Structure formats: structure tokens, C-alpha cells
Length: 347
Image 1 (cartoon, rainbow, N blue to C red):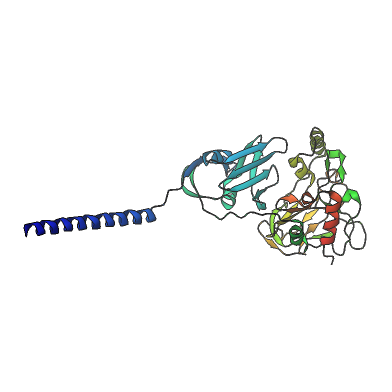
Image 2 (image 1 turned 90 degrees about the horizontal axis):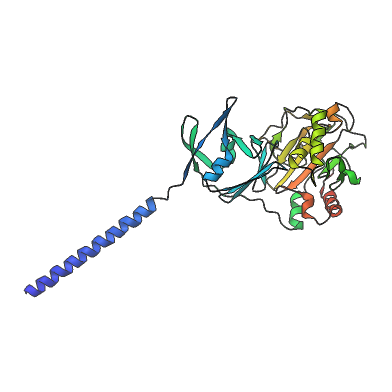
């Protein structure tokens, strides 16, 4: 009888121990579900310039384990971190994020990159968790990575096929110098877009000729406040360009003059350059319909523009897909220009 009692007591102890272990495991597993691995928090000192706070982006990139590269010739910065790629060129006031352009206010000089803090918060995947004076604490946000991926020739052309010409009833240009690939010896480069010199009546465009959006999309840059270069400054940029095999990117931006950039959800972006005037409705962040007025043709940024002449008026349009020029998807310029001509809808 005593033996049975001992066996029973032993069995109960084992059972109680098993229940305790089971409950302990449940508690631990439950705790694992509730506790998430804390995200890294990065402290950065903001820099104040004329009352505006700027964030030293390379410093944050280094702390967050990303990669920062600066090209001193093109004056371009490339950042790769958390699966995203950011590409910036001095003076452009936009950033290419995974193939899509977004507005961004920044200062770039000799590899130093300062991003206006309020602008930074709208583009980069961080949020502020605290601040003390000019020192802020930033934590990584978990956001889906959206990447613009070019497809084969047929898919790429389908994305661009719905475009319209930027001037009513105008014919697509045919002169080689007005098409992509035309030589631009004065700046040691090539023509990257399409030049439109004539209106639908085959008359030379003027400062009053309206420019219309070739696609739907969102305005990511609009140069309402534009100051024309001095002729001496332009000549200095051209001298610098002669030192390299192709025109540096930041100089190209200067040569485009007054601009409007419109980014479409399809990945197609269009730059309207040399404008004389920008339509008041073209504000950064505003959605634009195809055919909506962008501004008027001009000669800003050109040799005629810097001397305030009324000669050389035209529209220059750059067409990009996922951040690359349309012609980069073709083996030859003549093929690219021919295919582009076939894509336009003429009003």
C-alpha cells in the first residue's frame, strides 16, 4: 500500500513538473511574440543655415550601415541602404529613388551633402523619435520598396505609347540635330532629348507659345524662381566640359535653363527645358493631366538666353524611363528616334 502511495506521489510530481515546464514554454513563446527586436536608433546633429535645418546625409548613411559614393566630375551622389537606391545631382532639386523622381531640397559641395530636414522626412524611410537641441534621434521606418523596373522593348514602348506631342498639332522633328544623339561639340557631348522649334502651323515658336504636358503625372520640379546665368559663367562651364569625355551631369542641368519635371506612375518622366515661363499651376506635388499647360517655350540656359536675345527659342524635352533616357534601351540612336516618333499621339 505504501509502495502504491509513493508511486502515486511520484507520478503527481512528474505531472506537476511537466505542467510547469509546459506553462513556462507557453510564457516564453508568448513573450517572443510580444517582444520584437528593437530597431536601431541613430542620433544626428542638424546644421542650421540661415534659419533652415539641414541633415548631413553621409553621416547618417555611415551610421546606418549604408553605402555613399560621390562622383566629383558629374557632382553626383549615390546612396544604397535598406534595399533602396538614391541618386542625386548637384542643382537638380530632385532625387531618383529606385527609378522614380521625387522632389528634394539639398546642398551638395565637394562631396558634402546636406539635405533640408523637412524635405528629408518626406523622402527617406526614417521618422524622428526624439530631439534635444539640434540633435535628433531617427528610427528606420518599415516601408515597402517600390522599384521601377524596365521590361523588354515592347513593354517599354507600351508605357510610353500614350504620350502626346508637347505643342498642338506639331509634327515630330526630323533634323538629326534636333533628335537624341545629335552632336553637341560646344560642350563636348551629345543631344539627349528632342528639340521642338516649330508650332502646328510650321511657324517658329515664340515666348508666347504654350507647352503642354506629354503625359499625366506629378510635378517633381518647377523652376518658378529662376535666375539666368551670366554669359561669363556659362562660358566657364563650357570650358570645364571640354576637359572631359562627355558633359558633366551638373553642367547639363545648368544648360537646360528653366525647367519643369513631371513623373508618371508608369515610370515615364519628362523634363521640359529652356522654358521662358512656368505655368502658375505647376507646383511641386501637384498632379498634372496629359495636355495640361506646363509653361511657354524659351531659350533659358542657352547662348541666346544668357545674352537676353529673342533668338533660338525652342522646347527641349527629355524622356526618361526608370531614370534612364529612352534611347538607352536601344542599340542605336536612329532606331530609338524612329520608335519614339511612332509612339506619339498627334492632336
